[in-house]
Image (tube, rainbow, N blue to C red; front, side, top):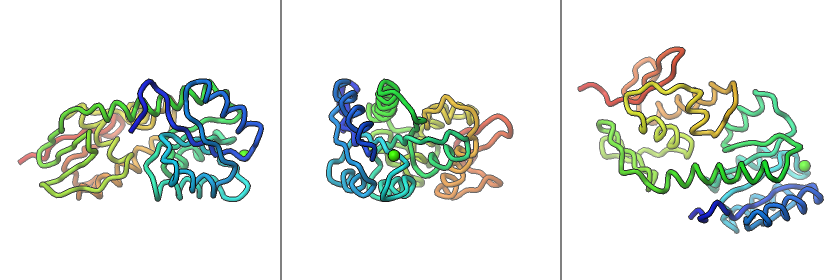
Length: 234
Ligand code: CA
């Protein structure tokens, strides 16, 4: 699904024609195949129609709020979305990541920055698809290739980020992994703050695994340190 060599089919959603044209040219020159649209509605339609591998979404669009566009894209596709935002405060970035963005860039940005983010997103996806064998954590089985999870043989329906989080933890079974490491590994963030993003996804994951923070089975939080994945004691 992901093009080899770090090139991707990119859908650019940007209403500023000058940025759209110059960024489209630069990304094409970097080897990507770029489709560009100028509105949120066209962006959602483009995701459904063109099946891009990466979406670069400007949040300031004339027809729809960028966050609504993100939600609409998420309702039809797991495609990685990099949002371009003019706001860089922690709270709004956390909101975006919780809403399903994979990465973000702060405006103004360079085309080289965007290209680097696109390649990072593809590398993270590619690493998953190269497929380690299935990971067993007691009755919990995680298949990185098909991205399927079963618990006691029954499928568990996870979102992409919930799966990525579980997979990241499963790669270090029994070890306490810090939230900072998880932010870097799952969200690609070399960035302070945002522990809440991990907490929110952990709580969703817990619910789907039928446990709570107070009565954990698989996901054990170690206060002030991080979280570890371990099989329930029999
Ligand atoms: Ca704009």
